[in-house]
Length: 180
Image (cartoon, rainbow, N blue to C red; front, side, top):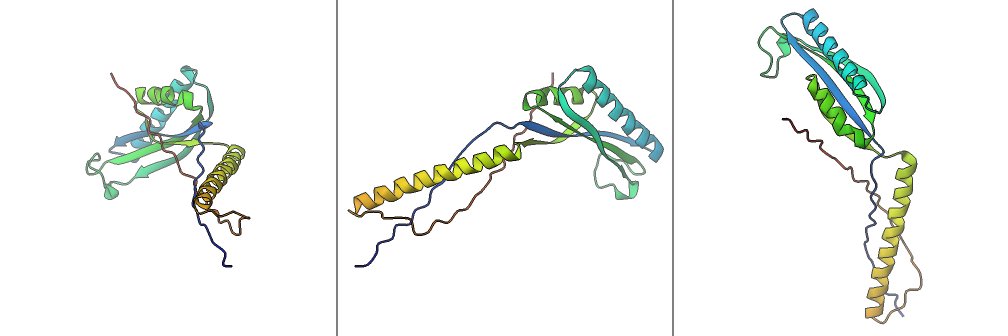
């Protein structure tokens, strides 16, 4: 007697709220001289730091990431006129998701920008969620296989082969700021 094979695919889905948000903060200045551009960008970065601390936002950390100076010969953007330098001080801040929009508002009040916001879940929680998603997928696969077997008057004796593909979908959330 030939063995019948039932092949099914199933997906396990889980959700969780992010634990923290990593914001990239930029303080940019444009000037005719390199020193002036750097000084103005640094001053703006200091104002951003002060404004954040004055606002008493609960942040996990705030640190300087890098300084960038754009040469006039490399002007690839229309916001820089010929012969001008662009200096940028880049900061990094980590806070709770609840504080993120307030932090973005505070940064924008002193002409800072937030080009990226990365939401994260701790590794231990990610592993727990992956295990739960796999369990959910296996439960769904078994139910589908049993339904097919029942409709064909077959019995499922055991699983001969199980292949697993884990896909962790990145969730992107755009913070929108409202200006008055």
